[in-house]
Length: 375
Image (cartoon, rainbow, N blue to C red; front, side):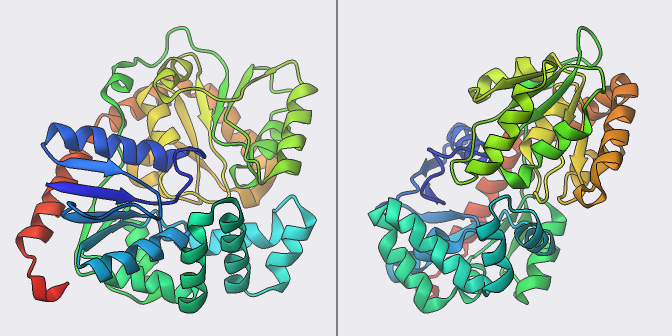
């Protein structure tokens, strides 16, 4: 069986959690004799593939293009939506963007127009995206999302609440729906809580929605070392400058611009607490990896980490501000050994090998029931 994984075109140059997710799919599916290929190019050839696995409906530019191409080619699709809570995204866009021009654009212009403008901005940097942007203009972003969801033979969800949000937002029901939980590499699962751990860790690309600046401001004077790991988002220049100014003024903060994923295990294991206070997420891998590595986890309520870690993590709402954030992190520091132990036990239930088995079963179910007349 050959499967093409097709997603945002910059997934290998602007790496994020979805990059890790799809690369792990490729690695683990190969062990099950499923040949999966990650090729995000809008020009990717479909010849010889049995199935197209599309990634993402928030950034619909490429996903719609791949869906339209697959329909013309008569190839079945599945979708990993990775759909962020819509109300949280809207709240962030209208109130939290650092660049004032962007903030007013999101307040004053229709969302569809802003999204189309952003898509043509991507096309300026990559000529391969010109035709996808033109197709998105004809179809429209929201109609495009419904089309992608309706065309998919299966929704592969990473959280149950993600499916609820999709149905509520787009009034679409899937042909088939399967829960394919995120996982943790096996080498992350051998950690032990406690031991020689100290300090707070914040992992993620430096950008406004990740909220690193507010976290760092909330932790002024807390009295423990802080490590920030993450590349800067080139489209959030002013925000990155503000974060770097805060880091530069604080001897208690160490900044590591970028680390290979296979090196993150040792960084997690050196820290007591990991903090994520994003304005919106789905099920961030950093929470799961930190828990597996024995860190106490402070996660955002604007996502679905609670489906994975439950009461073994503490949760913050970015809307509630710095005092709430600081108090929750201090509690996590006080309970670090207890939470680290509970979280590491919870995390053992989530492995990429299990995700691969689930995907293989989905692929077989779709292809075994495929009739050429349905394409």
